[in-house]
Image 1: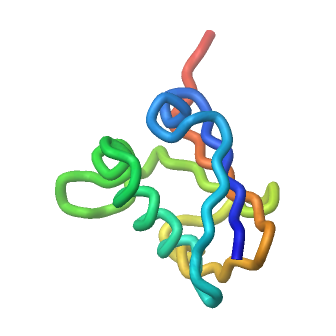
Image 2 (image 1 turned 60 degrees about the vertical axis):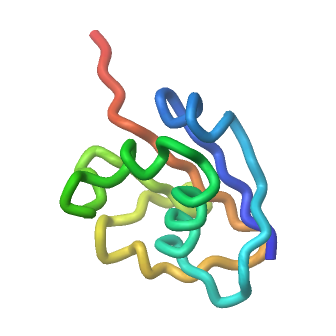
Length: 92
């Protein structure tokens, strides 16, 4: 199945603005994050702490709905879903 990924701010530098990936049926958000870590150097360090925990500031949205971390990492994915990944954003 095809999943569309949109990355914002600093994650865009690692992943690109928009990418599409083919992943196995039955995959969840956690599976997708792991796949991105394998194919995009630097992404693992950007989203996971040294202890392997997802960093508190990472925001993931599935079809425009913000996921609660870490419990929603098991959310199932469907063909043509859109996953958006945001790093912390600061401004003033």
